[in-house]
Amino acid sequence: MSNKIAVQVDDLTVAYNYKPVLWDIDLEIPEGVLMAIVGPNGAGKSTLIKSILGILKPIAGSVSIYGKSYDKQRSLVAYVPQKGSVDWDFPTTALDVVMMGTYGSLGWIKRPGQKQKKAALEALEQVGMLPFKNRQISQLSGGQQQRIFLARALVQDASIYFMDEPFQGVDATTEIAIINILKALRKANKTVIVVHHDLQTVPEYFDWVTFLNVKKIATGPVKDIFNDDNLTKTYGINYKVSIHK
Amino acid sequence: MDLLEYIELVINDYTLRTITLGTAILGAVTGMLGSFAVLRKQSLLGDAISHAALPGIAIAFLLTGAKESNTLLLGALVSGLIGTFWIRGIITKTHLKSDTALGLILSLFFGFGMLLLTFIQKQPNANQAGLDKYLFGQAATLVESDVWLMAIVTGLCLFVLLLFWKEFKILLFDKDYAKTLGFNTKTIDILITSFIVLAIVLGLQTVGVVLMSAMLLAPAAAARQWTNNLSVMVFLAAFFGAFSGVFGTAISATQNNLSTGPVIVIVASVFVMFSFIFSPNRGLLFRQIRFIKNRRDLELHKTLSFMFNIAKTHENISHPHTIKILNNFQGYTKGTLKKLVDKNYVTLNGNMWSLTQEGFETASNLYNQQFKKDE
Ligand SMILES: Nc1ncnc2c1ncn2[C@@H]1O[C@H](COP(=O)(O)OP(=O)(O)OP(=O)(O)O)[C@@H](O)[C@H]1O
Ligand SMILES: [Mg+2]
Image (cartoon, rainbow over all chains, first blue to last red; front, side, top):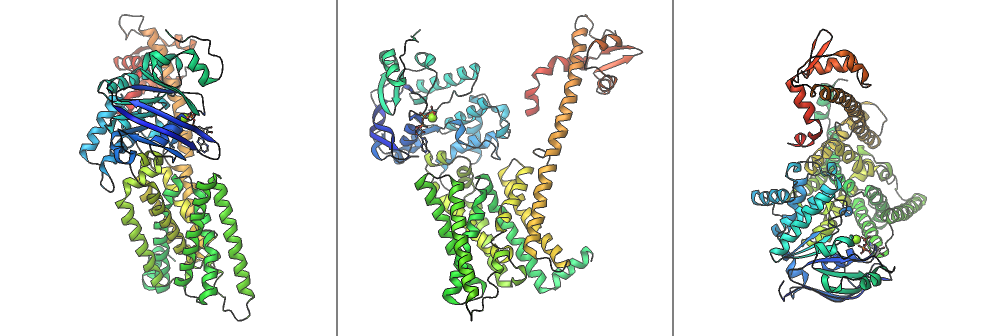
């Protein structure tokens, strides 16, 4: 971890209708952290990521990636959407989906070639999905689809990774495989931001954490701020279960 | 009339040739574009657009008094585009569900269009005859210039499709992701939608407002059944569409008094039905067959693994055993035993059976076979 700020969010407020779902968020994410975003369903975790990535337009506030706007820095950023956000019955193969990760660097009109295919195959290998490369995506299990999305982001070869619930519906073995990949990314000084629901594993997997529930409750190193007090503030109910090791 | 005679007729008869070409091209372009509508789950879009085009036709007539198709279709294009962008606006601004927005615009524009049509028909001196052909279509009124126009639009559409293939694909599959990569999804979206509007408007004269959406949906829905590859799907949809056009025209030309548009739509629908039943991967029939076959395989495998468990207690795996012990196993029938022999997993000797080396290996690999199928 260095002193550089990878992602900075200032006074961000986002609303779909009238009521803001994110309220005045300030957030600084240092370079090289593996950060969990935790909060209950509907807390605005996906919305926060989508706003940072320019998918949603905030009603107020700004976002910068290494000091510049997202538009200028998009080649530094990769994204793993929530799995349920696409139609998996789409007529295409696993390899083809992973190749989409190269589209951004290709730009308009240019088609992916051998180089892109090689990168996609490597990413598939990395997530252990190479044997499934020619499978129609609807014939993959939920956990396999999740790994395809991860591979697609890996192909982007970015500096900052945003992942929306990459552990959703994966078995224990896959979860370990994925977290090892994330840890390897951090080791390479990449910044990884993960929406995460399993509070038990936060201290084990992550070194940085943000508590979110419409407002930002807290953000910082896991060892300093991952405590019952913040959990109670975020989840409402009294957090008596001590989940530290 | 036999096929050869008919082909000769198509080649020599100006009207028939024009209609055949026109409906073929129309079918191809709507099939192609329909794939995109189907994959985006915007099945109602075509219906909304074609209905939204009706008031444009009426207004163009009221303003210019023209009866020739180009002027009227220009009117249709304008009101079709207005309707479409209102739909987009409603969806993005109000958070109504898209089918609500589509239904709303459809009824609003169609109602208004019908109002104008009845108004025109009440005009004493208006030579209104012919406007209602846009309701149900009248392929017989196609002339060569109409076909040229269709061909040019189709060519243009094909060119744009090839040029922006990758962009279209990623927009269809994962719009938000495409946005994060820096693609202006709005532009791509408008491009596709405009072509869909254009293709629909071109079809109004032939197929009519009411049935036009079937031209968009049917070939694409049929094509989806046969393939898991987007390019193949688009190609097949174009082919099914073109074929429906040619075949539908042939039926209506040889059976007097059948109007072409509805026949084409029926042919396309037959394609859909056929595909839903008979396509190899997604079709109902083969799915049922596969289900039965899987059940049989399972029985076979169960018997084999039962034998395997007996055989592995002996040092020599091919040690013979009496058939009688198989009777203890409920899944066993004479048929399964014969099939196991056919597959060379088991050999019979009198009323004794023994596992072959191959049978032994197959049985021990039964439960980790999944990967092999993918290689
Ligand atoms: N497209 C939308 N239109 C309107 N409201 C939305 C939309 N998407 C999300 N919301 C609302 O915004 C709030 C935040 O949603 P968001 O998806 O960001 O939550 P989340 O923290 O990611 O939840 P989860 O854990 O269930 O994924 C919720 O109250 C949700 O109902
Ligand atoms: Mg979410």
